[in-house]
Image 1 (cartoon, rainbow, N blue to C red):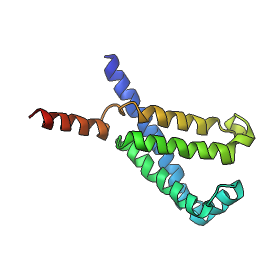
Image 2 (cartoon, rainbow, N blue to C red):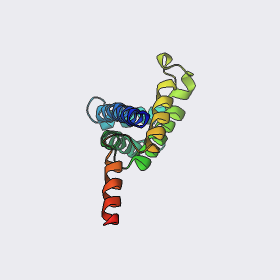
Image 3 (cartoon, rainbow, N blue to C red):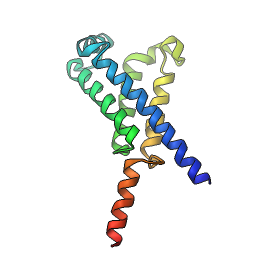
Image 4 (cartoon, rainbow, N blue to C red):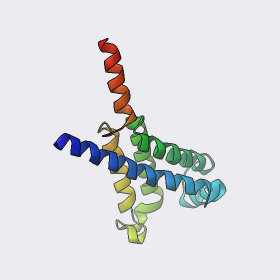
Length: 141
C-alpha cells in the first residue's frame, strides 16, 4: 500500500513540475519571445544570452514534457536543476529568499523537486520504469 501511494505521489509531483517547466519555457517562446528573453538574460548578466535564451526555452519545454512522460528522468532532472541554479544565481539571489520579493524560494523548490524526481524512478506510468520493465522481461526470455 505504501509503495502504491509513493508511486502515485511521484506521478503527481512529476506532472506538476513538468507542467510548471513547460509553461515557463513556452512563455519564453510566446509571451516574452526569444528576443525578449535574450534581452532579459542580457540585463541579468547571463553569459552568452543569445545562446542561453533559446537553449533554456527548449530545455524547459522539452524537459517539462519529459517530466510529464517520466522519460530520461536522471538527465532531464539534473539539467532542469542546473537551469534553476542559474536562475538563482543570475536573477533571484540578490532578492533574498522569499518569492513574493522575487527571491529564490520558488526556484529552489523547483530545483530540489527536479532532483528528487530525477532519481526516484518517476513513480506510476513513468516511461523510464515501463522501459526498464520491458527490457527486463525481454532479457528474461
